[in-house]
Length: 362
Image (cartoon, rainbow, N blue to C red; front, top):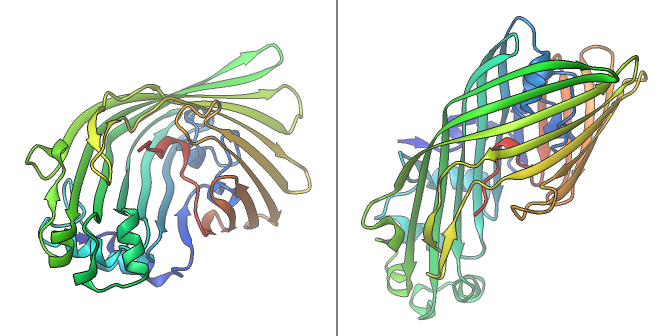
């Protein structure tokens, strides 16, 4: 078994007061914005498939490796959560885990991509793990007041719900189409995915015992649900003729939606239609000035189809060829900061925004 986060990214050596992003793209340090960014097309192809049309020769690409935790600290979660096929914790210890993290909702999110691009065509592997510990209101109130196991209210309940998606693989291709007034790049990403879902819950008696949890009804006695699915993302980037220093972009995430949907239960046992992959429309603009200043803005989930609508803006200032400072803001997650040194990028934020190609709705 592998411990999430510590063994995956070595994040125990980095500050745990913030979310961490390590990768080839500067977007994480600029509020997650960069759909129209063309400065590093090899890295930006993970954000917008159209960017791959500007890659020539053989390139090794890395999408941002991001770790995000909400509620409990990343260090604490890394000690307690185990990532196995289809699950993040053992059924025998889940109730104790839910009691330990009963004060508030807790979320751990890990994403990453890596691949090879050859003149406008790329193949990559990547994925996302989204794990949530969800105590209901009576249990949260108990954890903040009494904390004595014998005093756990009768209507207490908590759930651990986790989704894992692995690309096996993603295939991306793009072309440039000269137009009378500019240059249009068009790209598509075919996503061949392995999907995992698990949901354990504990009631008052099991929370007090701190041992075995129960499988949610939708698992039908199994430890997890596994599905194979295929989806397609589309991307477009338009740049005007001449020496214009701006570009505009459109990305349709889940243009062909992966066929993953079933009836699931929430933290209180209520039934709802679970559909983690929803089509979203996302637009961006980038302005690259001769002074070395880069300004980017993205409009995410236009129309709020997936309930994730937000605005992201970012700024970068280059100093020479190998150093850049960055800052940004995302309306749903707040401020970010980052720096680039010799092509290596790192970003910090209280809450990092999730890149468009790695969002889940649940």
